[in-house]
Every structure is written in structure tokens, then in C-alpha cells.
Length: 195
Image (cartoon, rainbow, N blue to C red; front, side, top):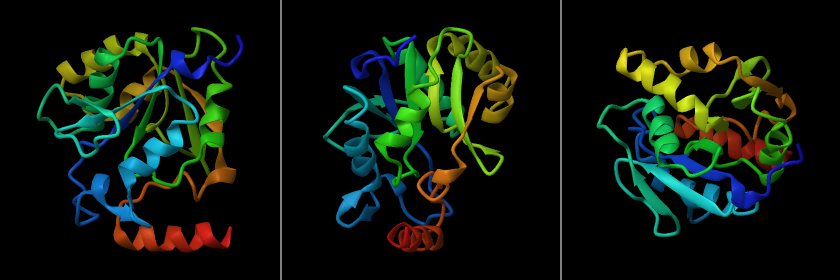
């Protein structure tokens, strides 16, 4: 199956975390005058027509906001909210703490959509799977909801049980880093400049 055109896949930026380790709200933290959230939104515009942000409150007027379905703090909540909201079979989901991603990296995942046998497509970097940067088929919703009802909030437990397609993107290690602390942000900025 050829890569789906961008209007056929919805994109969701998860911005509902507490950012405890970072020390301030990552969604509105600015790099070169642009917030993490708006930076990711601008990048994703090359790949997707419909881009939404999910969380407890809106942080940008550039995209439509979808409120988490519960106050529970867990990435699985964002994924369930996205899959309940979507009108698309396939959906791109990314955490707001990945401001250095590029549209080329997203394209590499989109090329892996080859049918309905694979319902999650996510990257690995140096052997570590990154579940909050990937494509999720809407048929995953029932599995995530079942886990949530059983109070199994650990995202990787559900993802691995669904036997995801894992794409090795280790060559993009720096651009796929989750920024969890200000120290990581500073180090990443230096590495991006060097590269």
C-alpha cells in the first residue's frame, strides 16, 4: 500500500504532562522564541493536514485542542483521548517533549504503513523503543481502554502486547531525544548545532 496522503492521517501532540523534572511547563517553554508545542506543530504541517493538541488545557491558538477524558496523569490517557477523537484509521502521536523532530523522520514511519497487520509503528533508538513518537491504528483503542479499566497505566505494557512494528532510527538519536530536564535541553541544543 502506498504511503497515505497527509490528509488521511490525524496528528496529535500530547501536552498533558506535569513536567516535574523540567521545572516548568514544556509545552510553553521557548526555544529561539518558539514554544515546544508550536515548534512541533510547524514541523508536522509538512506531514499532516489535521493536527490537534491533547492535554488538560490549551497552550496554542494554532491548533484545535482536545481535552483529556480524565484527570489521570499518564501517557495512555492521551492516546485513548486521541483514538476516541479521531476520524482517521491511522494517527500520528507525539509527546510535546520532542521539539527537534523533523518531517523526514515522520516520513520514515509513514512508509511502514503496509496494511492492517501492523497496528502500531514506532521507532527504536539504540535498542530503546519510543512509544510516544509513532503511528497508532484506531483498532488499538479497545486494547488501551481495557488496560486503563484494569488500572494498567504503563504504556509499554500495552504497546508490546500489540506486537508493534519497530523501525530502527538510531541514526536520528539526537533529534528523537525526549527533553526531560533543562540540562538535557542545553546538551541537545549543542549537539544539534554540531551536527
